[in-house]
Length: 69
Image 1 (cartoon, helix red, strand yellow):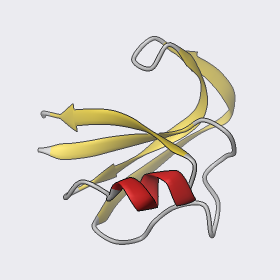
Image 2: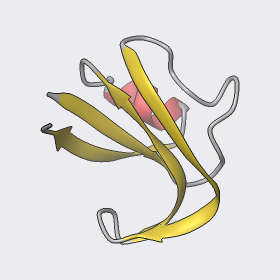
Image 3: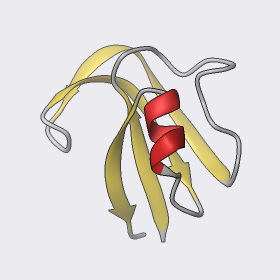
């Protein structure tokens, strides 16, 4: 199981992505509407453990929930 967080305000770049338990970063290259979060986003990051609410707020992410393979 992985935990997904979306980049809603800025694209993933150095300093915009928490590194703790990071498994994967996907960038769309431009803001793209995604029905999963009902908004335009720059991409997403998957983590092996959930981020803290403080990390989500500091990095201006949107929680996407659990992802099952």
